[in-house]
Image 1: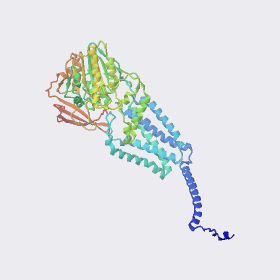
Image 2 (image 1 turned 45 degrees about the vertical axis):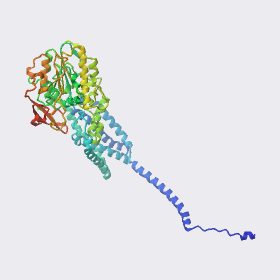
Image 3 (image 1 turned 90 degrees about the horizontal axis):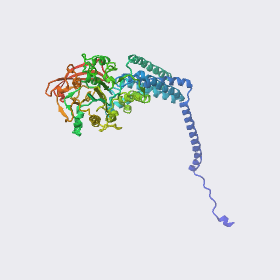
Image 4 (image 1 turned 180 degrees about the vertical axis):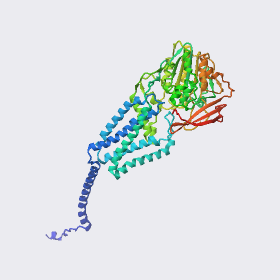
Length: 606
């Protein structure tokens, strides 16, 4: 007991004030945190509920959705492709009447799907989605009609997109402003916003419908709808007399010089040919240059296009193809019928490969291409590189198993090598329109197609390689020597469609008369042009040619001949002005190009 009493007493330490506070505060903080988290969850749930909550029925949301989706589908999937097709009548082989049924079907499917699915969204989510669609509709309409500027036609030439950076940024700012407007109206007044959706959609459809009626009236069906130049008899020749004319689109003499800089002997395979190094075309674009090559008509831009094509083949009572036909020659033209004859009515009696067979449209490819063209027109400038395409690709893929001739020599390269044969007892005249060195560059030097872009040098060499293969085959058949052959261009490099002539522009022009083989290529500086082609063709057939002018081989190198060149200038993609040049002397010197006249174009081709 004493020992126990001697032990130190047990000390109980009282908690400090801080410890007492902590004991009280920690449980309170825990409770507070639990309450805060619960309130946050409730607030988030309430917020989500308010965003999704909608007092409107599905039916009311459907009506708004239907108005807007009809305008979107009508504008971008129906009216857009129809208007583009109508405006590209010179470039595409189909009409708005042909594409109307299935483009209307596509637009209707998109309209129904969008109108039914969008109202499944509710509340602000539905409203904000509608705001974005309204902005897209307004922005697309304004872009397509007012903001595209000088993009020009889709001729296959590369566009300097990096050089458009400032314009792209400005264009994006405009689109952002347009996107902002529906949201502001929605914030200020839901009633005004709903009316905007309805009346804006209806107004755009109404305005475009008026334009649509005009398009259909102006594109009234013709008995020549569907006529085209077929591939018939492409590879068959006569055992008596043949005259061949190869048009290599945009065969500028500068391209020939670029080829010779890399391969000086390349053109030496042109057995029996003369190269005319001072040759010019008369026009800067395929229409009317290709037609002029055979007609010599200089009434382009002076009368309506349809009237021009009719009158051109009766130019002062001269018709070179009729003269050939009347002399017993089989006449075949492998080109786009619209480039040469307009609707074909002026040539059906003497051109053997004009046909009116109705091809089956390649609807999937055509739908894809037309929607791509529509997107190229309506999307912001910064998005256009993704939708860039070449109108000839649209044309070439328009039909299934078609016999239409396509301006794509690579397609026929194997046929020239393997199918060329003698089948005709009568003389033949064949006119072949090749792509030549026209962009886009898709040919390899051996004449085969590349999936990757090549170059103007490779494409030029590739086009000539196809010709070399044909000429070798003709030698095997024993018909090369007695065949007259012309290789030339419809025009040279136009440099800029929206500017007058920027440099001296010569074209490549090679001619081999009948009865020549085994002689090297020679060069002539004679001042010639496409105006000399009709007389040259008729002379090669031993026909009367005096009324058609002078043939190439009768022009002396030292002759002083004044030549004329017509350069159309575009504004906003349409031909507006015509510069008339007079060339005195060597066409390779730009000092010799003098503006003789400038006038407004009343009847454009493009």
